[in-house]
Image (tube, helix red, strand yellow):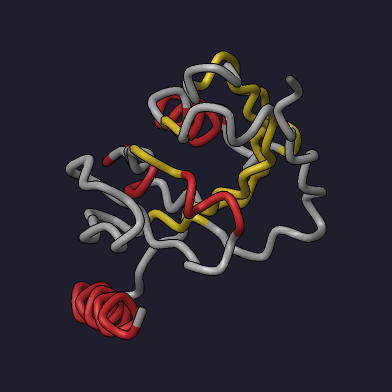
Length: 149
C-alpha cells in the first residue's frame, strides 16, 4: 500500500510569509489548533491546512533595538509518520545569525498532520512595526481576515 506524498513546494511558489512584528501574537485560524502563539501569515498556503502546531519566532529586544530586519527561507524536513520537524536548515539567510537562530528554534517546534508532508520551504520575515498603533492595526486586520474564513 503506497501513501501519496506531496512534493516539495518551490520557494518561488510560496507567497505567504510569516512576519514577526515586535511583540505580536495572533489567534490561530480555524484550521490550526491553538498553540499559544501564531505568527502573522497568509492563509492561502496549501501546507497551512495540515499545520497542527506553530510557534512564532521570538523577535528579541536586542534585535529590535538594533533595528535588525530581514527575510529568509527555511527548509523543513519532516518525519512523515509523525508530522514532527526533524531538521530545519537555512536556505536563504535573513542577514543576521540571531534572526536565523530565532526562526530555526521556532520552526523546530512546528507540527503537521502525520502523513502529509516530507519537506517544506517556509519563508520568514522579521519586520519592525512603525509604531504600537501600526501593530494594533495589523492585528485588527488579521483578525478580520480570520473571521472571513
